[in-house]
Length: 381
Image (tube, rainbow, N blue to C red; front, side):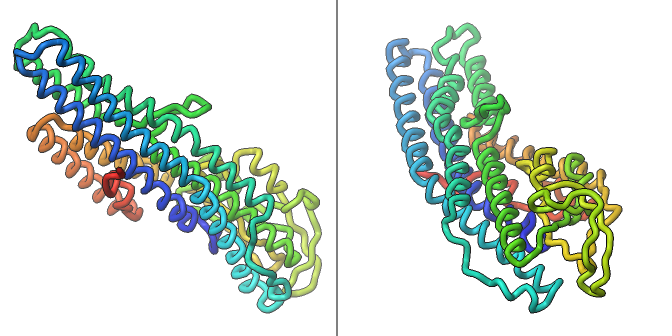
């Protein structure tokens, strides 16, 4: 929607994502450091198995304690974060409704200003829903972090069949695998695999987008507007493409061919209302990663878009997201590298993929978002 669209949803989600990405990379730093120490100690040929076992148990305990602190902190912060996200989303949705109705109707929309949205039962439910959505990410942190350390050092107690050189190569490969997989990957209730920060970003975007749309619809309805249209979004997904430019009703009372009054001429005009907002959502519109919203439809004043299909734009966006994942992947590889050689190789790969992003954005006109290429901004203790 022009007044409360993708960018406003994205910045709410990005702030939350950055907090979790900092946690994610703090965990990787700790696991990688403990794993490197374990490998370096056990590369010594005179190490005894008993000492190795004790050292690994102590390292695993340190990793677990760090993971538990982070999980506890994130869990404790979640309710306040969810309240703030839903509050801001509701305010933005209401402001967007007022702004768009003012543009379409002038002072007519000012007859119902009302107050800023409070903690309505709907908003409380939305906040609790976001907390519930984040909960699986928190509960997975301790288990996935411990597993990551154990997997990274699994071969340190093995025989020295290949000598020190063979063991060093095993160490490099183990640390490279740690960088590839990270330490917080988990499966959601639907069985899908996620990075911690990516899952949190998606969950936050979904919650804030829904609240913004509902707030816009409620404020518009209070001003007498019950119809809405779907604006054009560049590079829309195939699931939402059929809805662009279509008119929806807030409550389903107006569906199909409907006669309404043109606000500019006061003459009757016929429009096609495709579905209710609830029916559109049930069909996949406004799905969790959707970038769409809705705008108030005022007969005669609104101009829904036409001929908006942009499948190439969708492919270009998907390619950009893939390139960003490659950059983050190699940055994690760099953080988890066993030695300077591995770090230098990973850093070179980061530069290669960043060059690919520059080429892609230049050729497609997409805007590069360096924040999406970053790992956490700092260590969370």
